[in-house]
Image (tube, one colour):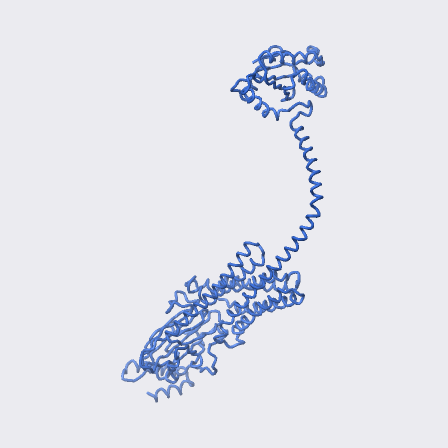
Length: 632
């Protein structure tokens, strides 16, 4: 068997076709000859030394220094046969450095990782294989028993894998594995990035107890981190709601964007919020990242007054913010696009321009700008490590993978300090402005009081004049129809309380239309004014009140009047008009006369009923020949 295997390995470089043929023959022989000790797969795999899991000693074991890698040259046939990747003719490459995390960079092809494990202990070993990166698009793990070539366990997960089943309910892939004493296994891992941008692959092996202790501690740490961000977000939202100060609203928007992005980036959103919405997860990751850059710029513009202090840097930031937001539109249009390849560079440029602008403002003597610089420095340190890993300028390590979280903690704490300083600054400015305002108000108060008193007197006089104008007829000076209803209602109510009723006279000039037509409107107005002047004491009593209710119609309210007094009053008015001898243009008439309709109030009268009776009496006087008084 060793001779056949060596011959196959020797021919591997000479002819790919011959190697495939020989491997096919080897598989057939293995199926037909069960007395052979091991299959060809196992013999090739044994060339990779197995790692004893006793090296764990209660800690995590980084597998990269113990592994070998293989780049997939072409898309494999479906379904994928992982055993084919252990062929001796494939160009597996050993890892030649001690960096703990795999970094495959930007590559449209998949990458394979192979690690061999063995267990030399006396009791079964409960292990957990962890790929501590939730953003890997597609990751598959197979574990084969080396002695028999059988599949022990497998997992298929990723943030673009629809319907992925998590072996453990964890934010990234965690595969439980139990090794029996003396057992050896081959671990094969395949990672693929749909957009070609491979995320770092921190692959490590845990004892089960150590993993669950670590997972619990990690959950507490992230819970505290997100809790602190949530409290800070709520605090700033309350400040914004209470003060309506735009600084707090923009900072809350920035902080909220970062919180949503971090939940997505760390895999918690995919685990708890939208486990099967893989397309939305990509859109959310890019969209929240773009929103972070845009809100970061908006917050800095408001906090540091950049549009006024550094206009050209402000315009450059506006362009970068729009470029960042364009990536959100791009990822919606094409969820498989490699948006981070350019979005990361836009973010780095945004940081650089913001720091330069803050430096200029700080150099001008603005203290809050120095606090802002310290805050951005913390984030920039963490983000610089993050982007350096993404752009393959820095090898990923365990601490480096948490650099962004550590930097964000420092940034948000210092920005909270900057906002507190801003609150005090605004309060001092407001107090100063209020002091100046009070001085100005005290200086203006006396002058305003004098002016108000003068204007109040003038307004009172004007109101009185307006009231008089509103209540009186401008031609005759008598009360007009607008005040009649109120006065008539009051007099009817008083008549019910007293023994004497209210007398009502309705006067109408006879043949007034011919007077206007032949004598002219000016003469008609003259007669009306004369009549208005006549309807006063001594012709009427001082308690009587006269209203002009129409063109040539007048109404006299005569309180406390009995039937005899009403008749005497009506006749006195009629006779007085007749005695004036005002010429009438109509020769047949000769002079101006008046017809009178008179009535007394009843206890159940309303303004409408008494007015109707007076009108009926006037009608009777007109029908009886005019220049007479009629009673209802």
